[in-house]
Structures are given as structure tokens and as C-alpha cells.
Image 1 (cartoon, rainbow, N blue to C red):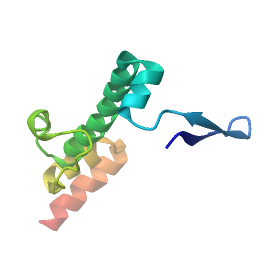
Image 2 (image 1 turned 135 degrees about the vertical axis):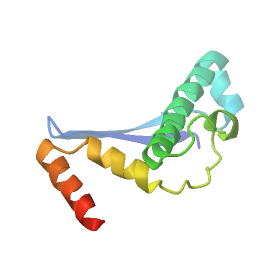
Image 3 (image 1 turned 180 degrees about the vertical axis):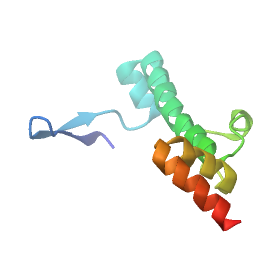
Length: 112
């Protein structure tokens, strides 16, 4: 894996670029190149972003976010959480305008 293509787009200025960067062949090589502190801090930063995604998904689906503290592991896919229909409706309602909320409530009443 010596060199990896890293690409970026800057749409505001209509430019893009690609370069090759050597992150190392494995963990030991990366630690030798950059130091254990840098490798670990970058691991933690990336793991936080992935964990935040899992938390966001649980929040949106009405799942147990606190449970992630014991079941989540970096690199291991979580079992899908079924969407709680009540939580989904509440989340959608929170983003509606006053007019949309009024119509939504009327539709709910009409549905029975």
C-alpha cells in the first residue's frame, strides 16, 4: 500500500487535484514514519467520526445510543436498528414549518 492516491475537489474555484502519498505499508511502518502519537491520534479522530455516525443513526431511528458505549468497536459493522415510527414522525415534525405541522396534524386526525 506504499503510495495512495489522494484526491480533492474545490468546487468554489472549479479546481481539483490528486497526489500520491506514502502512509506506510502497515501499522509498524506508519509508526516508524510518523510516530506512535500521531498514528494513535489520527486513529482516535477517525474513530470518533465513525462513532458519531453510529450515534446519529441510532438517534434518527430511535435506538439506544448509550448501548454503543459497550457494543461498538472500530471496524466492526453494527447490526441494523429498526426505525421507531413514532421517533421518525417526531423527528420529521420538528423540521416542518408551521403550515406543514398544521396539515400534518389534520392528516393524523383524519387517519383516525
